Image 1: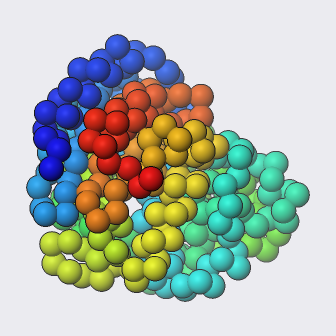
Image 2 (image 1 turned 180 degrees about the vertical axis):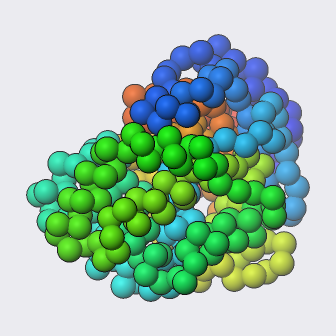
Length: 305
Ligand code: GLN
């Protein structure tokens, strides 16, 4: 077994020169306040060990990483019927792009771009009596952290400035692919994006995807094995937006990123690894985080390929 602790500590040293580079997501003003030199990384293995380095215990805004959890809830509720309302192809466009939606009649390319996540949010709102409580309970159970919560200040900050997401939601509604009121969908979407999680939470919280859809410590079935397989496939092809091809080439594992600077990756049957560094590259993925995950697969020899 690789010496994960030594590898994480070495990666932290190697990415240090990158920590000032990139830009923070200032279209959500609250996120622009986070110090850009932060760096944390955690690995959770299926045998119950957790390795960590740097700011791995500090919470940050999960942002689009939450899309994996809402997709989990939607698949559990409606199964494959979800795919009548959202596709499974990489978009090749920015995560908040409007252009494709017009040409494709309000059917978002995949659940991990904002348009697709808004449709998934709509499905979750229709399927569960108390969607916020259901989502929070789900994420807490997955991360094994009952203290995990949302950050209302981040959600409010995004709500005040979320003009693109409002445009997307209204546009999708015009094609009839949202059922709940637009404001309700946006409020839930901003809530899910504001989940405050650490690298340790995220590494633990994605282990079910490395374990065929079952929780590794108590065996609880989160999703069917084939559904977990498909979420991993979607993360590989769409989880890092229009950088997904490059990310697969450099890193070689399914992963989901967020504009809070977090990225979580999965090596099936082995581990989940989470990294956080707030400054982003031009595609909206953590700049140092992407480099750190490339170093991780290079140093451990682990990859899905
Ligand atoms: N809340 C962010 C947005 O809608 C999430 C995007 C992301 O993390 N890529 O723009």
